[in-house]
Image (cartoon, rainbow, N blue to C red; front, side, top):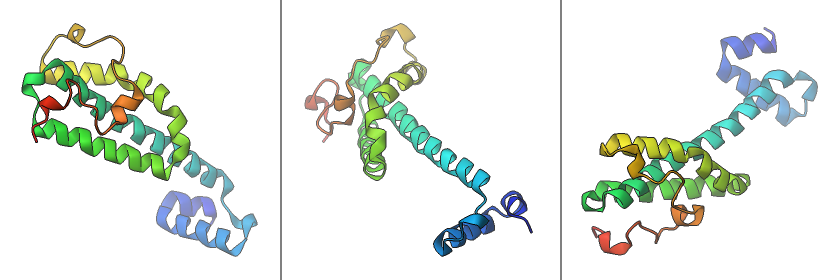
Length: 152
């Protein structure tokens, strides 16, 4: 069976074959085209995961900022969880760190629109540009409105 057929018909077997070829130093047997596509896809997946986590995090920070009276333990847990998961992702892939500010800018409109949808507030109630710095977004001690809103 050709490497291409394995890739198309049995992905796990193809992966195992590629790993075996790499370990053996049998580079001529590598399916370079599919292997490079898979590696590119993994990189895109990590970046997508970072953006998705930032959307959820910023969405909840916006809700806390614009509806402090509705702040809940659930919102706080979501913020804490996303901060932890983003930091773990950055620890595993430090090359993502320089992209954080750009990623924050890229996701803000989505987070803003989702916050408006979830809170049923008008979109214009949320700032047109991100009111948080990337340092604030990731800072475990930063909470819109301060710690007095902490539910303990």
